[in-house]
Length: 258
Ligand code: BV8
Image (cartoon, rainbow, N blue to C red; front, side):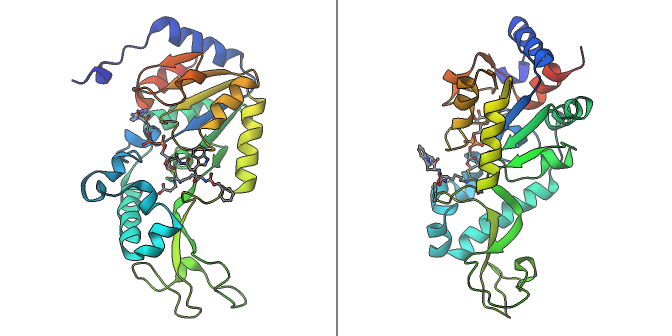
């Protein structure tokens, strides 16, 4: 068994994090791809294994990459979408959702993930920073001049789909590298980071900005920062407590009722 399969929560650190949780008025949770790994969705970096391992994520997850080879990028997303549809929320998603339901108004999940597992676990308040892989939008919003506008989800099937009425090209409803994050969602995430007493950071390498900056923002605003990750991350320096373990191992222990 790999070391992290033998997760033995460091009792004093877990106790410290549980005490902070019990006393927190507002809990912010920043999640990354590791949150969904135990649901069978490859992490973003792992999603580039196999067929995709020879590509740089920014070659596939960018307007330039899509425009250079729409069919290839569309196929990558189609494969990932199938994985999301097959996946189920894991014990970590369920523990977060159960805690939020037991403590109404005290938890907000800010996710970098483009899957819908937090939502399907029943998490009441989720801020999506990078969009929704199951949604579609036009590559160029100005292409469609129909009134009412055509629906990207109704575009004719293709690799990628194209609207036979307006000629617009559909793309996945995610935020690509080099694209601005949805303004209102980023602003909400920053408010949540500024106003929380505790930030749980779960399953993120801390490599992608501006999402990665939210942990430092919370710390500077006076929050306790707890990182849950079996490996080191680029934002470990922001943590007051580092819980070395996986989402499905640690979160049920961390969030269990006293
Ligand atoms: C923007 C959607 C500006 C698409 C994604 C500042 C400094 C440096 C660079 C930049 C900067 N500011 C902006 C940039 C550029 C860029 C960026 O950050 N580049 C990086 C690579 C250097 N950022 C952007 O381009 C952003 N846009 O800033 O726009 C702007 C402003 C105005 C006008 C125009 C432009 C947009 C970034 C969003 C990109 N889209 N996703 C898709 O999914 O296809 S990002 C994508 O990668 C994911 O959504 C996720 O956010 C990220 C991967 O990060 P993680 O989630 O952390 O996943 P990763 O695989 O890296 O790590 C997994 C972790 O889980 C690991 O730590 C592992 O140990 C852990 N783990 C594994 N198993 C488990 C586990 N943990 C717990 N349990 C387990 N079982």
